[in-house]
Length: 465
Image (tube, rainbow, N blue to C red; front, side, top):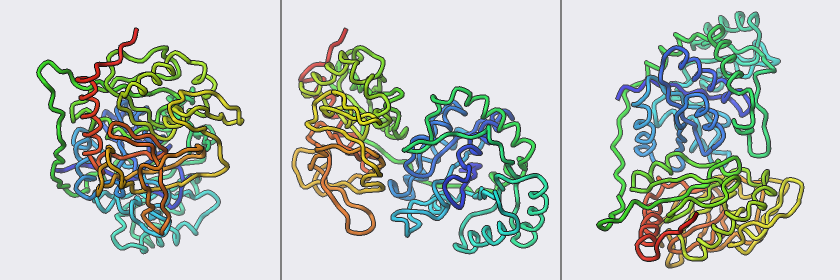
């Protein structure tokens, strides 16, 4: 298919990719376009900003999680609904798995999707030195797909001088600049940027940035580059569907989603829905009861440590969750959701608060990232959602740990020899720190829904007021 597209990548993290991506998306909207947004890698927060701008979900594309065909399929099924697609890169352009490979890097995703790349170069404190920097990225891999450059954090005068020099020496198109604008920034915290809901004037910032980019970027040049993208081919991915008995309803899955639980992969949810699930959102922070007639629960990650006291005080829904799980309701819990199920959890100040209490452990703060990065999960145990001789891919990124991380699954890093046991699991549940990506093993998600269907048929649903 002909799918106009570009990638915004950078030499390093902190170069301004997310803000410029959001400004460009808003600019496209202002021009009457219908853009689609994607994030390279396992990041949750950047897609939240994309979604806030365009009003529709932003998707993750990750070549560690999925092979070439599945990656193209996931991109294409969303991109074909749009006029133009913007892929935001991750970290430095060539930075991939293990820090010494380009696997799962922005570069690899650009290759797999055959996407023209615009390199966002933070030129603060630099002038002519940006030329050899750009040259190095162009020469390091001859198939880099880098077709354009945007200079960030520079002045109009410096840009006018550098543009001519770069285009003459490197034969690459310079597509504009972004001046230093202290008021157009986004704050960070321990897991990355703050979330969009925490920025009161985000909409105003993005609108101002879009207006600025109209003046400083070569928008027609960007459109031309996007339209130069070659046709992309893929085979559709077939997934199994839940078979319901006569009169049986679709499995109704309660998904925790609020300020505390907001880290999830959109494609995971859509895969569950495609298989036949109904997803119903609830808030462990604000709701007093669970939604009625649930057949399963999902508690994804987020920032529960920032809301530990409020979560602890909302005792009604905590007790309902505990009773439902103790009755055998199927559930999945990842990272922050796993922490919420512990006996206690610390907040950022070290204060301990009682939580749901279905996991026999305590969640506590650490001083550094624990078990950070990609992993492949397997198991040698029977009666698990993940079967023997299978694997599912996942990612960990957390500054907290627990006193009991489980031992039903086995985690292995893609590079080196590091491995460990993790996750509390059974034939209808899995709870632990890893964030799972279902398209790396759709059967895992299907078995979870099958267990929810059986729960509905054999045990009845959880009734609430």
